[in-house]
Image (cartoon, rainbow, N blue to C red; front, side, top):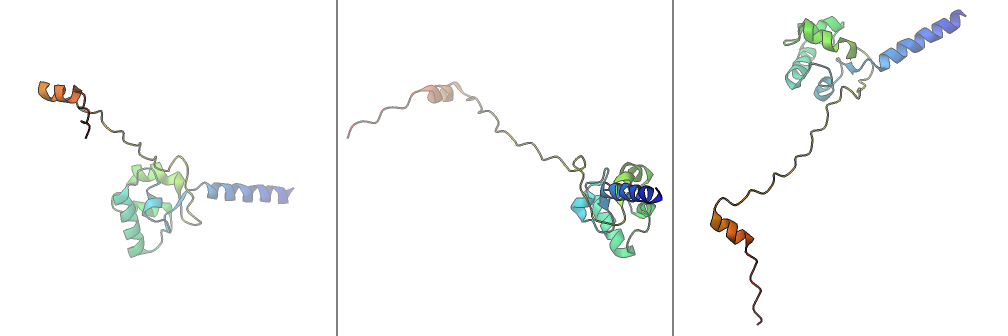
Length: 127
C-alpha cells in the first residue's frame, strides 16, 4: 500500500510539473511572453536579470526584476517553473492575428469620373 501511495504522489508531481509552463531559468523571450502579464519589455528584463545575476532560486525572486511586482507575479505564478523544460499551454499561446481584408473599392469622387467608369470600352476597330 505505501508503494502505491508513493507512486501516485510521484505521478501527481510529474503531472503538475508538466503543466507548470515556462522555466524562467532557460526560457527565451518568446517563451517568456507566454506568461500572463509578460510582454517583450518584461521578457527582456527577465533575461537581462538572469544573465547578470544567475538563475532564479525561487519564483519570488522574479520580484527583483524591474517591472515585475506582486500583481504581475500573482497572475503568472502558476505557470512559472524553475526547472525542467518549458512547455507551452494552448491558452497561453498568443492568438494569430486575423487576416486583413481589402477595403471596398472607393466610389468615384466626381460625376465625370463616374461616367467614365460606367462607360463601356470601345470595341477595337478591325485592322
